[in-house]
Image: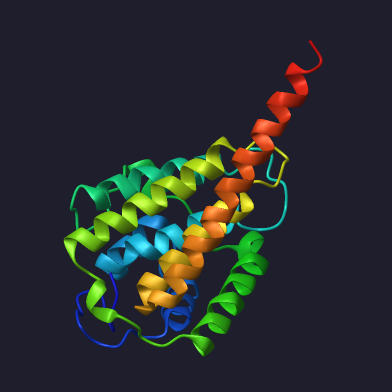
Length: 209
C-alpha cells in the first residue's frame, strides 16, 4: 500500500499530497471507484484518509459522518481478510470525492498532508506492505472508526479516534513508523477519553435515581 506507484514495493514512497491532488484535479471522474482504479493497493490507506478526515475535524458532526465510518470499517475488514485491492459496491463507487462544495476541505487536507511530509522520512520500512502488517493496520482502522461511530452525536468525541486513523493511514503511505505511532497515541487517547466520559455520564445519571 505504499510506493511510487500502485504496484511498487520496497521503494521510497512518492509524495502522497501530489498523487492525491493530481487525482482530485484531473479531468476524469473523481469518485471513490475512480480512486480505487487509479491507485490500486495504495487506495486502502487513501480511502481511509479521505473518509475519516471529515469526522477528524474539530467540529460536532451529529452523526452525519456515520456512513463514512461504516464504509471504512467494511474496507478495513477486507484488508484484514488479506485482499490487496479494494472492492466496493457499485453505489459506493459513485461517491464523489471532489466538487465545488468540497474544495475548501480538500485544500485543508492537502495542506495537512504536506506538513506531515515535510517532517516525515521512511522509518522501519521493512514493517510495511506485508499481509500480517496490513491485517494489523486494518484492525487499527476498525478500532478507530468504530470508536468514532459510537461517539455520542454533537459531542466531538469522534475527532481523536478519526484523526488517529488518518495519521496511521498516512504513516503507512509514507512508510514512517513514527507517524503510525503518533496516530496510535492520538487514537488511544480518543478512545480512553470516550470511555472515561461515558462512565462519568452513566455514573451521573445513575446518581439521580
